[in-house]
Image (cartoon, rainbow, N blue to C red):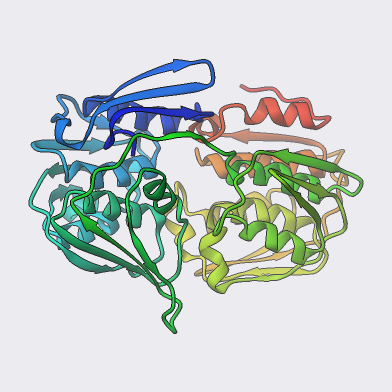
Length: 406
């Protein structure tokens, strides 16, 4: 958004995660400049009309968000934009964003019949239209909304359920009007932008990421007697689904103004599925850690989207739990976890977890190992830096664990 706004944007508390720095490199390639002053990142941009054709390949590393939103932005920039990423990102589906943008008139080519990176975008040629998304996806919706800023007329995006609305929130902060409608009987959500529109620069403090906080909130919830206070965490719509599940499992949560306290307690298995899934899809691996320590059975359904994350997270989460001796059944769209593990009960055991370079699997494995006890060796933790570079430092600070990074 700062790239598309003419002038200086001021972003306080911007993450240093590799996904964010890769996206920052992309916007510099389009003509913006960045500098950091203390906790504030200043982004100066020529605005949409002043963007330039990149003279380099745009490598987004492991950032699916950066790549998908970037492809949407590239439709606004004259000339060619070529996107790639690391091995994991090059195997994540991009047709889901390429196909709807093509319906608006975009010219995009991609590997393997336009389904994967590398992908090339030729800017321009967009037309008004209505796009129906088969799966609620904040990334795809956001790419379309960014592209809509350059369209002469309305672009409507209809998703089967409300996905994370951060882009809609940013549009309003940047002075862009949009219309939303979630009154249909089916529960579908429609957002409309009538272009062309030009955003104003942003001046904001970015709240803490609930997906990052979830690892520590779950760890505390699983540990009777523990208490954890998380400050400055975003608690807006569609991001608190995992907190609702923790409460249903028996955790005690005390929300306050700008913070949240969780008390450790005994947990019980629950059923998770339906319309809540889009609001907690990234938290399912760590919720499975809560399920491991809960009495009874936890069943997760309607989460087939997990199959196309950095790894097949249904498979890798099941492997993680089995490495701790838990019984798990894989479903086409979820998992059945047979809980009953006791905190500290594995203090005399050692296990090896293969994270397959998936940052959320690695962090879930670390938290499970801390609460269960014993020695946990995790292979493939380097990608934790894509979303939470200080995770292991914070884990050591908040627990009695001794952590050695190889």
